[in-house]
Every structure is written in structure tokens, then in C-alpha cells.
Image 1: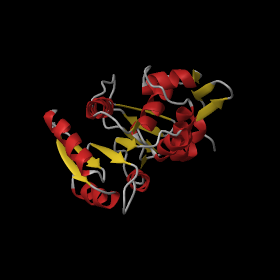
Image 2: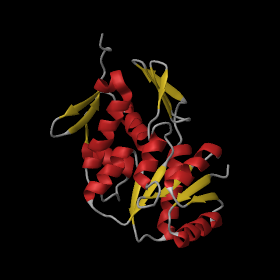
Image 3: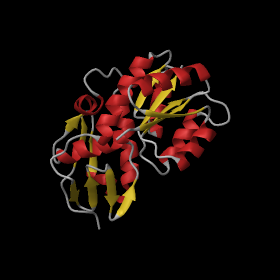
Image 4: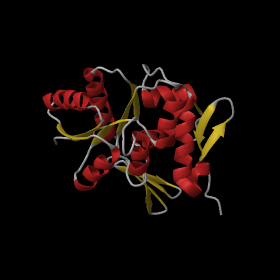
Length: 228
């Protein structure tokens, strides 16, 4: 399968540079200079991953990501000149999978594209699907249904749910979750875990209570009967 990558950035030079590097790695690449153009492309093409700049005219990256997350779990890498932790947390709250601060090497972007595509579409699993207490998880398709209704999770939210689910009844520290989902070389804030778990609970709706907070320690997927 030749994956299609969407690059959204108002800097033509950077768009062309990233496109050239990704094409060299045998990806199909589409580009847009703002969020409005990107939405039109997303509606008319099958996109496997998007690389989105934050600061753009017409529709910025935050607004675009917010629109994407209303209906899709598309893997997203955000590019921004801002390195402030609050900006990163905003990105994670909106559903960013990877956050890269400019200036960034095209080789670094390509490496992150490869890693995120692999985690999203090519992760090997022992079974195709599993279910518990009204939560249905299709590991191959990265789909989650709650009482038969599909909910759209970002790749990171899906990975956290699956990781907690596979360790049902075990309390996992934030550090352990961070290492398992983001990797040992991730240098970000532990609050990224809290932000993603908060969004995950909200999306799980009536099943959100199954993910318990163990104060001062971490999180646990509860093994209990559904609430009446």
C-alpha cells in the first residue's frame, strides 16, 4: 500500500521540501497552504496521515485539527514554532499524536511519519478484536464501539485504551504509560498522559468510569460490572 500524506503549511518552501523527502521514501503526497484547503482535500481523498503547521492564514492548525477530530482518528503530526508546554498540551487536548517544534529537519519529520504510520496501520496483534462490558475494540482496524456505536479515537487515545485494557485490573503509573505509548526517548511532560486519558474518558461516555484514577500514581482499567 502506498500511503498518502497531506502536508498543510503556508510556507511554500517547507511544503516543497517535505514533499520531496516523502516522495523519495515512496509516499504519495498532497499539499495545502491552509486549513480550509486541507479540509477540501480530506473530503475528496483517502489520507493516511497529516502533517499540519499551527500558524496559518484562513484556518490555522488548531481549527483544522478540531474539525478533523469531529469525525476521524487520522494520525496527525503538528509543526509549530512555539515550544511552550501549554501549547503542547493544547495540541494533545485536541488530539495531536506527535508535536514537533520548528525548525525541524525534514529527516526528523520523515522518521516520525514512518513511526506513526507503523503504529497506526501495521502493529501486529494477537487477535483481531476483543470486547468487554459493552466496549468493542477492533485492533486491526483501530476501531472502537461503545454499545454498538462507533467512537472516533486518535491513534494515541486508541493505544492508551488498548494498553490499559490489556492490563485490566493493574494500576499503571503515568511513567509506564508514557514509556509504552510515546517511547522511552520521549522528553515531554507527564501531563500528556493525563490530557489523553481525560479525552479518552469523555469519548467513552457511559463507559468512561472504567478507567479509574489512582491518585498520585496512575490509572487502572477496572474489572467490574456495568453501572445500572
